[in-house]
Length: 505
Image 1 (cartoon, helix red, strand yellow):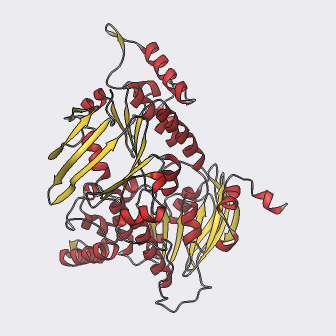
Image 2: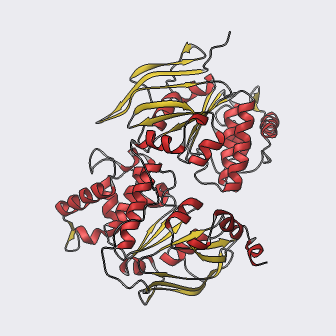
Image 3: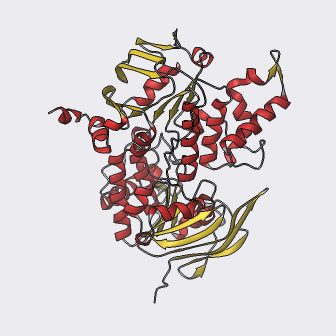
C-alpha cells in the first residue's frame, strides 16, 4: 500500500549566521496535489525548498520520500530522486537550444557520440504531452520569459520528477501566459505529479491550489485546505495582523502644495520600433499608473524619460527644465526604481548601507573624495528603520536578503535623495501582501507630502487601488487615459489588447 504522503518534511531547523531561518517547520505533500507555500518575504519558504532541492543542508529534522529517509547533499541528488525546482530567476543558458538545456549535464549518447536525435525526440514528446508548442532547436534567448518557464518545467520532467517546486513562476509573465502555465500545471497534477507552488498572488492560490501551508518568521503557522480558508483569514495567518485595507490612502496631507502644478511633461516622445508619440503630464501630489501587456513599451518609455535611452523625437521637461540624461534627471529631482532589482537596481555583493548610499554619494562625502562614514551609517540606519528592511545590520550583504527586502533597499536608495518624482516599475513584484501594504503606505505618504509617482504595474488591482489616473499602452501606442473612477479591470484589459474601441460604440 502506497504511503499517504509522497513527501514528509518534519521539524526542520536551519540557521544562518545571526538568523534562524527555519524553526521546527513541517510540510506534507500528496501525489497529484498542488500545494501552495505562502508567507511574507523572509518567512522561510524558499529556504525550505532549497533544503529539499539539495542547495542547503538541514541542521535538524528529517525528510521522508515515499516513507523512506532522504536528504539531498547536492542538487543532483534531489534530481535523481525525482525532485526538481523551477527557480524564480531561471537558470537556463541563453545561447543553448531548448533540447540542450533540457539535457544539460546528462546528455544522451550512443557510446561516445551524443544522441542529438534522441534528445530532440524526447524533448518534443515531453512538450507535446503538456501542450507546449516550442521547437527543441530554438535557442533560449529567442524565447519569452513564459516560454522559458515551460522549458524549465520540461527539463524537470526529463529528470522524471515526481515533485516539482515552482518559486513565483508568474512574477514576470502576462495574464495570457499565466493561463497557459496553469493548464500545464493542471496536466502535471492529472499525471499524478506533486506541485509545491510558492506565490504571493491570492487569485492564483485560490484558482489553482488544493492545500495551503503558511510560514511566518521561519515558523509553521498552519496547513489548511484551500477551499476551507478565506482570503482574509489567510492574510491574517501570513502577517499576524488584519489588513483591512491594503490600498490604504488615509495618510494626512503634510505639505501645502498646488495640486495643479505640472511637475513632468512628456510631449510626442518616440523611439522607432519601441513607442510612438507618447504624451502625458504628472502633477504634484498624484500617482500616475501605466498599464500594458508585455511588449507594450511601458518600460522603454520610462527608460527614455529618465535618460537611459535617447529619444528620437519629442521632449521631456521636469520642473520647466528639458531632460535627456540621467544626470539631468537626478539633479532635477527624478528617481527611477527599475523593474529588475537584481540586474539594474542592486549590487548584490555589497552591503545594505552601500546600496542605499550609491545613488547620492555627494550627500555622504566631505569635499570631493572623502566619505563621511558617520553620516552614511546614520542615513542608512534611518532608512532601514523607516522602510522596515529586515536585516541583521546595515552591513548585511544585499544578496543574502529576501526578494521583498531587496526591493525595499532599492526604494531606500532613492528615498535618500528626497526626489520630487519617483518612477516605480513593478514596485511590488515578488513581494508578499504585508510588504506590499507597507510600500503602498509609503507611496501614499510621499504623495501627501507633495511628491509624485509614476507606477508601472501589471497588477490591475494595484493600479486601480493606488493610482489617481492610469495611462494604457498597446504595442507602443497610448490607447487610453482615465481617472481611476472611470475604470474597471475589464475596461483596462480591453484597452491593453487594443480592443478599447468597443467602449465607444
